[in-house]
Length: 301
Image 1 (cartoon, rainbow, N blue to C red):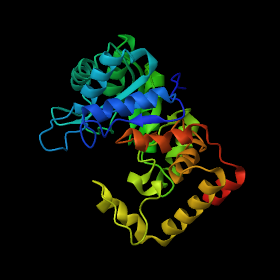
Image 2 (image 1 turned 45 degrees about the vertical axis):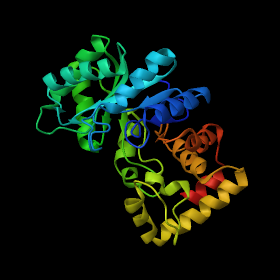
Image 3 (image 1 turned 60 degrees about the horizontal axis):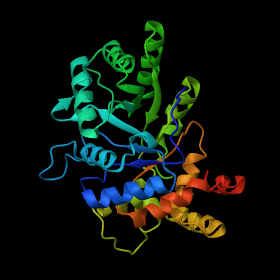
Image 4 (image 1 turned 60 degrees about the vertical axis):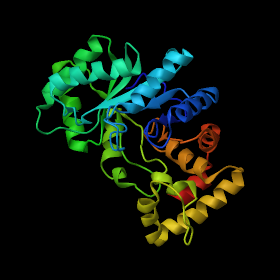
């Protein structure tokens, strides 16, 4: 079981160094903490996909914010290893090298939650389980997470850690939202059995569940092309109408309802969502205290 305190929402750091420059990122982070936010998610690979970037930009901005604001003890920081081209995979050597890079960029002596960004089937599970355990015993990380793992591999890694008396995975991170519910069949029940908390990413389906994407509406966004595909499914269009009704009944945004639905799901510790600007953060903060009724949840089932 995790001992971490995620708060009602984990702030996604994928926009930092991509759609949010350093100044905008600082403003979002300031507003998030001022509203009561307590945890930030990033990865060593953020945002290597941007022309001119090489990865580590998000961690660097967060580290500079920690240094400038003196906020390191006020929030948890979560980051990941595997996907950065310069530090690929889950060999023991790579995990130990990558964590030092992340600690340096984040300007901290420990990481609260360190994820395997995805499984590495080219490496024996005992090798990476032992490597993460070493980092826990050294005080460099507090807990270990598994992102994008299949149920069987996650269960075997946890069993292996138990057999070897090593630190197990306590948190999972997977794509999950009102229109992407594939993990409900096998992974979520497995997490429940193992006592692992789920922190879903893509909580708003790349912006679709903010309600701004509608039939016939053109949205100016870096993600618009992929998000528009959700409108090809009639059930998703119907879902927007249901979300509109529930949001109106509570006097909140569609975004807040979508996030509150996730927070109400079994095993979910907190959803992860990002904001490019402080203005976009407003609807995320609305979700912090929103509690959906049993009727609301039934309509969204």
